[in-house]
Image (tube, rainbow, N blue to C red; front, side):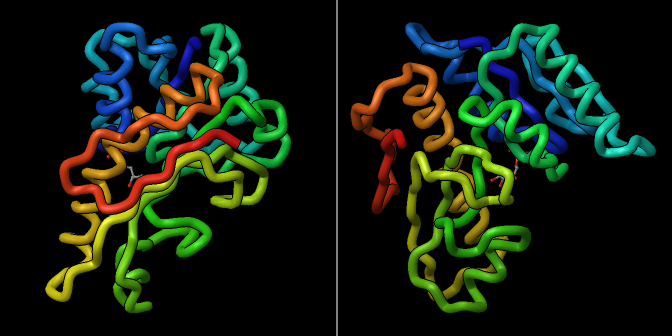
Length: 204
Ligand code: GRF
């Protein structure tokens, strides 16, 4: 599947997806990395995959999304992977791409939608935290769950140490979920993990 990755920042999940897609027999290939910010560090890490910037600054939401949509269609994109894309998309845009757009979120949804997930997980005292890959639906962080990976919350954790543990799991989970989605299958796949305690990966 011709895949676009949408980013706004450092692009570590983007890099994990690109590395996986470069491997043999991966059912998705990257055709575009698109950022809403020209200064996104990830734009410099695409290793030759075409990049585009559609700046959201100063544009009405509809105009921004019309431009985004045009770039994606021009590139013949079949699947969108949001990877740290920090613009909330309107229901209209999401509906146009529904079933063809996935996202990774740094918590075990439905717990902790939104921002500052690691600090909020610590404040809540949860003992398990993690990340979720889900279909994007008009309600932010509420689309059907595709895959989750859990990590322990350790007594000495702060938001940075917990966030780093989750991010390492994101880098394994997102490529595995993309493989499953792109292959269009429902079969369980194994998420490679040395430190992983719980993984669930399935297609809904
Ligand atoms: C990740 O934690 C991801 O879960 C969230 O935004 C962050 C992006 O980080 N949606 P990166 O740009 O992939 O390094």
